Amino acid sequence: MTQIEDKFALESFGFLARLNYYVIKKGEPMAVPKQKTSKTRRDKRRAHEALTPPAVSLCAKCGEPVRPHHVCDNCGTYAGRQIKAAKE
Image 1 (cartoon, rainbow, N blue to C red):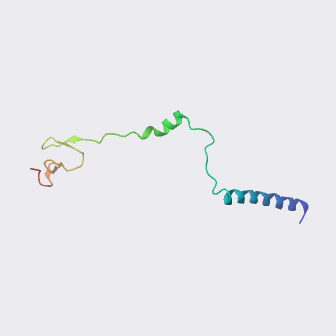
Image 2: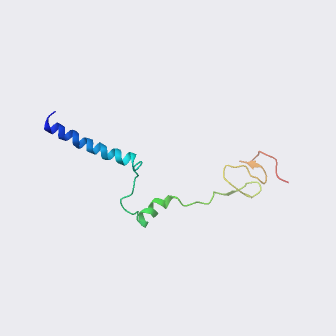
Image 3: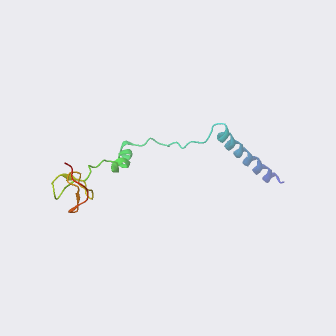
């Protein structure tokens, strides 16, 4: 082994030794942010998290509020057809 190869082997061993120290002694290396996330960036990320009210339409038969594409709980109709028995 030449002197250059020997030096490279020692340097690479040192790197492996340091890596082994961090993995074994200190546990798994954690991902840590380099900078604090600004309020603007945080709020831009959360722009799509707003809750929207559920869509509501009126039943054609009884006029009660009902969710679209759902059977009316009051009269039991859907798309003008009787699906279930009406509530008393």
